[in-house]
Image (tube, rainbow, N blue to C red):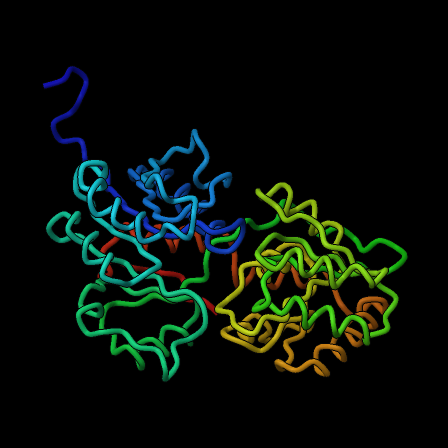
Length: 372
């Protein structure tokens, strides 16, 4: 026996997390904080990814969890080759068996990963994005892989249960986000500063927002912060609008806080969402927002007078821009009240504890804090 090692010392839980790392924000932010929380609770964490854009905090060298990837992970076009490499090489690289496999994707690849569970281990499936709908399908063999199911809101849990007939223990937990460093920054005098933060892709409504901005006729400037496949086209279209600019996105929470400190109003006009983390980030910093009524967005507006949820309609968005701008200038929107709302319902410390409990404790031991 090695000197100084107690024979009764408890074994550290091992957690395998698998996901595609595609951009800063959203899933990447959640995984970053989840890995940190699990490591702080003395878990051994392995983050295995077949697609990884790199240069993000969750996969940077020096993180206190192990990264397992493939030589093809940086190029989306080689995803099949990346998956094949994982089938061949990962069995030798993943190490001892795991207590939990946490996955954001339920597929045949999940069956492969289940092989690396200890007896009694659990597959935790976290379905993100819009609530399950009639045209969604989940083959029965995949249903049987799920031991624990997590979605962002009770509505999404219920939709998945009804559509996919999932009987596994379930929890409704919003994803982890950066939170705020302190009190909200007071609005600066002068023109209103409006912003979009997120991936620059058509499905997020960036071109809809630009078109509505042309007709909104408010004394304000609009900045798009982000990166994505439609960034160049957005810059081309925005070039003829003097009050609009397209800026780079953010890589870490420090830069995100800097950006939010310069924003009076956030706009997210997506056509498809789950429970967007950027809206939680905005509220944590006391930044009011307008968002379209998709996915579970409306859950963030319950009893919340400092945000607006509008139908997926150009006229509704244009009117909301004018109405919200007037409300902010007139002092009818309170940054402090918005921040307090976020703390009361989506406190980061409580959310972090709930996520750790959901992954590290068997469902029969859960005492998760109910979410609003």
